[in-house]
Image (cartoon, rainbow, N blue to C red; front, top):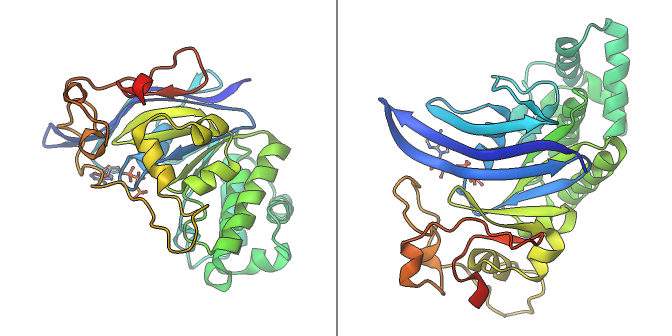
Length: 316
Ligand SMILES: Nc1ncnc2c1ncn2[C@@H]1O[C@H](COP(=O)(O)OP(=O)(O)OP(=O)(O)O)[C@@H](O)[C@H]1O
């Protein structure tokens, strides 16, 4: 299958007065194929959003990216605005749009930045895309200001805006976190339908393993800026091998009966990853041994589709 996104040895560093102060993304490799959804999952502060942003070259002030990012073999240039082959949809659709312009104006602007197009053509393209994402009255949405629409409608409009770029890759950063459960489910179904229809690849960033399990084909589990386990969703969910992945799955409420305690992973993600030596999860891991402090384990594929970064992998 063609890779629409290939990331090799991606690092993000924060620099202050010439010194590296943090390295929240540490040597990440990822591949997203055409038509597939790759989930990127981990607790808050693990580096998920920065990975997505760095892939597109959009970084906060003071951050630097190293490593290779290619789309269909072409290096993806860092730019202040995602363009061409990739588009990104953020978590909070309520703040993603400019409140003083209609949605029609904002979506048309995207289109006219990308190609020469007449005003009437632009309007009909925008209306078509608003229809494609399941908005029932595209004309009304076109004339609406952001505050006149619900969160779910705005998220659909954000997806329409992304589709106007005809992306080969869509990065969705917690696209349903700000939405209620039923609307969130509708948005996930929509994403699944659209990738099948248009064949773009999706990098779906979420802290919620339940969402990843329901919609993704493959998953990469991130901890302290590193991928610690990756594979098909079936393999990783049915046979998690890294203690962190097991901890995340153990904390899922699904399948528990009334009154049964939820398992929580003790401790929290380190606030800064710069001084990490050895395995970053060691202090929270029930299986840690002295050797875990000596080696920063790399992903070991063992020739299978599932890979895990843990020196005790064979014993667990
Ligand atoms: N602008 C910034 N300046 C300095 N450090 C930052 C900045 N943004 C992020 N970081 C650091 O990078 C780490 C990873 O942040 P990131 O937002 O990628 O995590 P995340 O996994 O997406 O978390 P969340 O789910 O809460 O968005 C953070 O813990 C923080 O230490």
